[in-house]
Length: 310
Image (cartoon, rainbow, N blue to C red; front, side, top):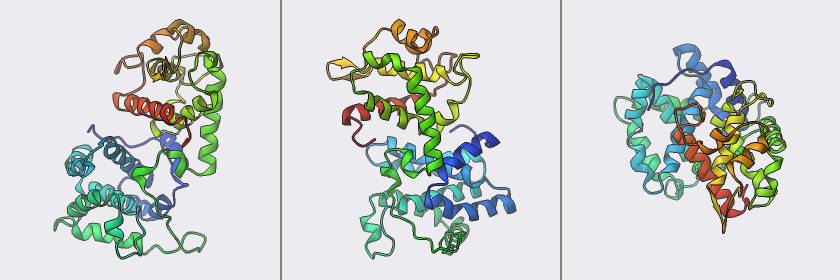
């Protein structure tokens, strides 16, 4: 893992808007903010973002994700250079994994679909070196029984490993921001409609789920290439359209059109960004290999299920 860099205000504001609709995030926000104030730790948004990254890594492992979890402590130490920070992140991740079954039921642990990952995390957190601090964090979390309006906190059962889209955990304001972004992209790409092998509503759902991805939400506001007429990341849009040209949909490609034809839709010369969407580390794409893979898998999934679960 690469070294962690603290978030700037723009990134914090963007992610906080996405997370605040999540009941578990709001419950953790106060203790995590106190840790930031008192110990100089990561803030609540940064901690939650790290757990999102870890959950995505687990989700990418189709068999035995618990084996991947065994490596998390060492990877996070290299990334943060602080055992205390790592224990905070893993404790929050543990509560997310444990939230997949009602904890008031006697067989909750056995019924939890994430129990193997929970067992790995519990083993790390309960080692003698970390046990006291981890238990203190969990106790502070459990003792927060009322929200800021005086209402009793009742956390819904949520399997964070089965969340098909970040939209499921966003509040209305964050969803509205996603819809604005999607609307602008649909308007810019109206010309591909005649080339699509799927219905326009499926294409819309694909973009809605892409724009809901944390990293995409942060990238889309950048003006790339510079001085393009949209003023946002047209390069990223061209990259995604390029991916769609290479994804099968029945007997056709999802976008059945030449690079030049797709470029003409965007209103300027986007051919290199369309054809070289996987040219990582170059000026042809702002995407990392990991994000590219995630977007491609999302598109393939939505094409396969016809966006029924979008």
